[in-house]
Image (tube, rainbow, N blue to C red):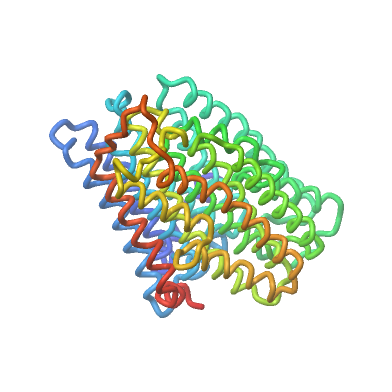
Amino acid sequence: MILAQLGSAFDGLSTPAAWAAMGPLLALGAGVILYLLCDVIDALRGLRPFVFAGALVAAAAGEIAILAAERAPGIVFDGTFQADHATALWGLLFLGATGLSWLASHGYYRESLPFRPEHDALLLTTPIGMMLMVGARDLVVFFVGLELLSLPLYALCAFRRMRAESVEAGLKYFLLGSFSSALFVYGAALVYAAAGTLSLPELAGRDLSSPLALAGLALLVASLFFKVAVFPFHLWAPDVYQGSPTPVTALMATGTKAAAFGFLIVQLAPVLPESARTLVALCALATMALGNLGALVQTDLKRMLAYSSVAHAGTLLLLVAAGLGGPDEHGALVAALYYLGGYLFTAVGAFGILALLEDDGARYTRLDSLRGLARSRPLLAALLALFMLSLGGIPATAGFLGKWFVFAVLVDAGMIAVAVIGALLSTVALGYYLRVIVVLYMQAPPEDLEPPRARRLSTGLVGAVCALFVLAMGLFPALFLGLIGR
């Protein structure tokens, strides 16, 4: 039976469409293997950065080829995987988040430098799981992608094993992630028992109103809500985000969130009943409220951004609610891609600067230690202020247009009251984003603390690239909307 399944899998690769669809995944898989080989062979160790970057570039080229093709590969492998323009855009987001997080990690792991190859190999594995998740049309394929993403992240969260907070973060994420995976498997089993299939298109055409099917769908949604830190499964995020290495936190806050929401909006939303719209909207508003209120009282910038990430997950969840029976499902997809694209560059840029500041100790991530940073490091303060403005949704930034598109989709779907409440909750976030700018520019530096040196070229490059895209997406949205296909 196993040989028959293997034979069927190889038969699926016999078509050009299947090869095109799997090209980015194969490029990343080959990159992981070559990277490990370079680490084993002494003469090739100097090539490791080029192999890592080459794998990302090759995978991105595969996604761009799918975007440029007049006819995308479409559905392959007996209907279990989908590769089209939308999944290619999601893939480019995943690769961008991975590449920027990798650049931000250079020079960060001083005490764990001998284990850097293991870190990079794990990091290069994560976008494989993300791509499988967003392209999955079968619950089994999605679960494989989920585990390919989660298992490396468990290890990466605890990578600074000499620091107790990092080990604690890895253990918490592992334990809670295991429960999340168990919920998904149990939910999939209940859905299969009720409907007789795990294929998402077939499930969309079945009657899933039975108590067994509804219980299974509820468990599936609960598992995904954990991954994106949505109420009531959000309490793990601040502790794990704060304790994890900051470049890993950047990837978790952007890539993991994008992969789970991509699956929710594209694949799972058509399966959910329209009656779930109100419940999902309430969860989204509660997530925004708790995330913003939690961030208001934080004194550590990294922990504040963790609560901010929870609030942004609530904003994205509003799109899932709008897509449940809404008149413009394509609009919800476009808004999600634009919002996550802007959030990727904004959040990775902010966490990248925090990683830079941590060169001089974790105390430099506290707000009181950043007082007057604009006097000693004006460029660093300017970049951080720009990212705070974008996260707060100030005009001329990517964050403003991202939120605009979200609320426009809600209005088009007739959810005007939800859009108004969501917009009001978003304004609460300005209270803590603007506080950071006040600390940077309007308060005197502490006398008992030396200003951070923060000299690392690769992370500075991350900040510059992210700032460029944040401004470009805010000032020239037509370029990116044309690429998305609005």
